[in-house]
Length: 225
Ligand SMILES: O=C(CO)[C@@H](O)[C@H](O)COP(=O)(O)O
Ligand SMILES: [Fe+2]
Image 1 (tube, helix red, strand yellow):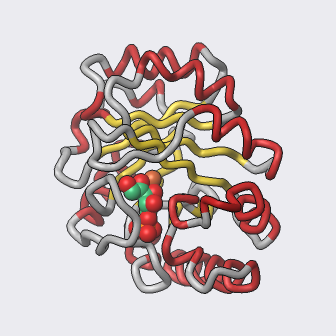
Image 2 (cartoon, rainbow, N blue to C red):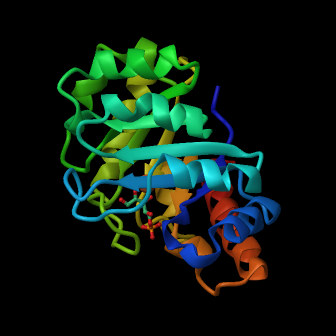
């Protein structure tokens, strides 16, 4: 049974001077989840925001807050992101020595647990934690920045993860370079949750966001129906 297609705009490409308004706009224009990219300038070469900003924008949308932690270490901050209002908390397998422990820490907060894999990380690292997972995030760019080119080799990994998951209720999310052109490739391979930053926020108006998200959603649907 396939999981529903989810469109998750990454607010990394939003206008940070009007973040609350931008979150509300993508919510109203068709976003299923709001994707929050947390970067530490250590695990990835960029710095974004932490729990206070998540807390501040929580009131702007009731949609699922999908938190992508690109921070190392991650365990000391899991509770703070849960308390700030994240619904799904995803840690990078490369950023934690004890992945199973990190996933247990997320579950202990009552939130959904995800693991993210960089493009070069093999899917075998999730083999023994599958029963703790609600989501697997397969990076389709190297993490750190929006607007990078999609890495097509990851499609093979999406299909392998899909086979590993079997009938477990786990979302397969992809992140990086997702556009109406690349959405059919990842959806056909088995991804159901599509993160897009620059392709959603381009144009800069709510009407653009609506059109951009619809184009990605239609392209993904077209590949699986
Ligand atoms: O996690 C990341 C980048 O590390 C992403 O969520 C980006 O924000 C996606 O941006 P686009 O590639 O869609 O512009
Ligand atoms: Fe992300």
